[in-house]
Length: 390
Image (tube, rainbow, N blue to C red):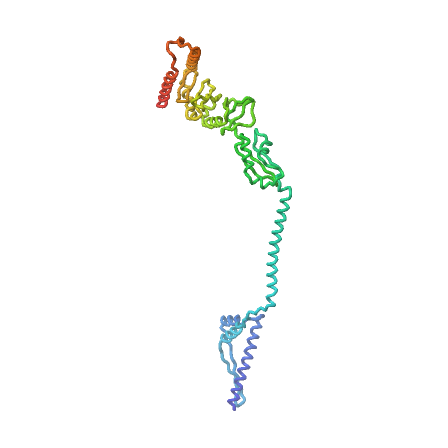
């Protein structure tokens, strides 16, 4: 009996012990002025190496009470508490019902409908604006401006272009025919470009070309350009630095001459005064060029550009003014020799017309002008070859 009592007392004492231990521990924790977590308590006990004391109370048969104490670590208890605290139940995802999904579906449908409505309104708005612009004055050509002209009146450029005020500005702007009309109908125009200005204005940028010669007509002098075209407007005071074409009745000969003239050296161009169209039975392209230094050049438009640049060398070797024949080769002779030949030929012609076969001409023999020219020509060729060899 006494043993059973002592065991019961021991179990009670151990329970009381645990209660006292818990109270003692709580009192110890509250003295710090703040509540500490189990992990904090474990850290402190590791640092201070303090142990927990268990008290056992036993009663003997004689009525005496025996108190026993034991020391053990509290780490196991703390770790168990920490494990309990960390284990928390996980929340499972809630299944959404159709009633929960309905607001989101309505929102998506509303956004899709708004996008479609915005697209329709945009298309309709753009179409309406385009229609309003098409019927408004802003879509019609309001004005044509001309820039870059010096001698041609701007009104003539606009007139020859073919632009029509009041018609669609865009259909006229994106066609090249007006620019072609300007160049074709205005020989002085070398090129023309266009640009857009303001709301409905077209600006023409014109580049004029300078004349390189003049054509003499009955009513005055007309400027000539390197492509052979003749200006529409005449001038009463031609520039003396440019040659004058005379007796060129056909445009094809004018164009041919200008194409050849454009290849002449500047030294030769500055010395040319007049160019005559002087065709013969053997050569329809025969020309006669009068120079400022008093000499005359005879040649053909077909090959004059290959020979005339040698003229300065030939002129230096001439003892007196005369003719430089470049039609068949390159040779020169004086005006006096030519005049004598022409006088003799005239007398022979008159005698034949009278039927006087025994006419005594000046000189015992007839002058053979071809022999004279060949002799002079051979001499000139040799001199040119010597000059090239030196």
